[in-house]
Amino acid sequence: MSGTDDSAQSPVGAVGRITVPIPPDGPGEVLVAVRGGSEAYAAWCDRPIATNVRVLVTDRFSARSVMVEPLPD
Image (cartoon, rainbow, N blue to C red; front, top):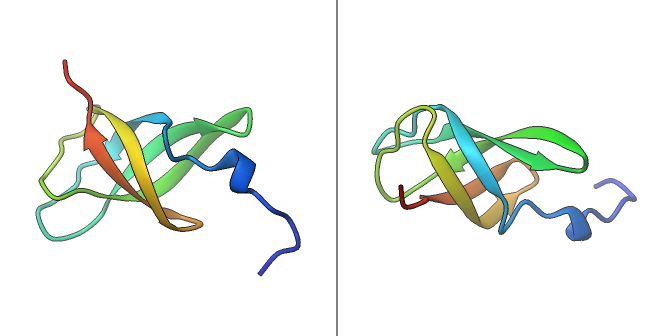
C-alpha cells in the first residue's frame, strides 16, 4: 500500500464515460476526470452499458475498480 491518501480524490460522485462496454457478467472500462486529468477504471454495473454512455460513479471497490450507473439522457 502506498503512503499517499487519495480519499480526497475518490472518483465516487464523478461523472465518466464508458470506453469499453460493460457486459452482463463482467467489467468494462470508464474514463473519469479526477486529479486534474482523466483516469481509467474497471467499471461494473448490474446491467450492460454501451460505449460512450455517460455514467455516475457510485462506489469504489479498489484503487482501480468502480461501480457505475448510467445517467439519464
